[in-house]
Length: 95
Image 1 (cartoon, rainbow, N blue to C red):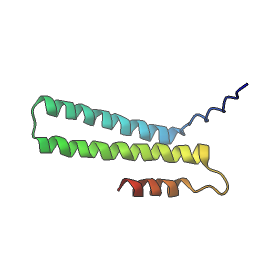
Image 2 (image 1 turned 135 degrees about the horizontal axis):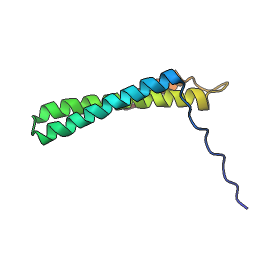
Image 3 (image 1 turned 30 degrees about the horizontal axis):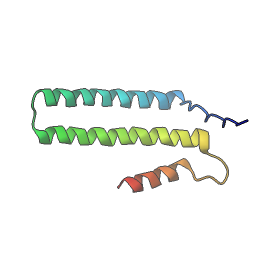
Image 4 (image 1 turned 120 degrees about the vertical axis):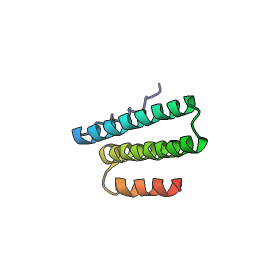
């Protein structure tokens, strides 16, 4: 008989974090639509790449917020690195 490992806990955001993340994701959604429109309109490649770069940075930033919330709520414990420390290491790896 095999045992099934426990499922990881669901991440529940507090209301303030959830609201901020949703607003940022909606802003990103608008920027992606803007990228689509720029391509359809045959805009300058440099303009498209500039906006694309901003979208990627913003998406990475939201991802870091979600990771930090996950670490703080689901993985934090005595002797564990603090979420901010883990985020800093992730940022260093991306450079």
